[in-house]
Length: 180
Image (tube, rainbow, N blue to C red; front, side, top):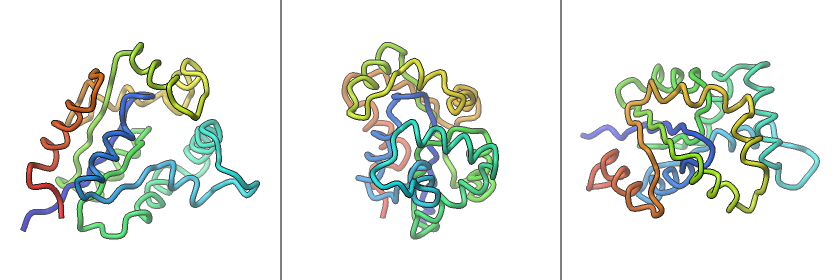
């Protein structure tokens, strides 16, 4: 019986992490975002949907105060079946990748996405969430993301204008037969 992969996605701001995660979910993998865990466990009690800035600030606060292991454990709670394949989108720190590597061993595949700055800026500015690309890029939460590229099992430059290349990457990761 084939063991399903645990895919951890990291990458630069607007490199395509969410798009890749959604594509993997569409192929049958369970899906969890690190930001989901932040919102679920430590969400704002003021009502309304937290902003991107709130998630960045809370992510940094949690990194400093409770550590990434606690956040990674909380992210795992979003996944119903740890034996089935799943994707975790939004790894930002070396400790995130190390946690999932320790927990899932050879099942874990770390995919790191990059894209040219101009294209990422265009994608970012096209989002409804607004914000400033240069501020997001310079944020301390993003400080270690580029270093994760050197530890990735798959390093992928998402420089396409369409999702065709990402679809090919999904096929490479989970195979033509998909996931159960």
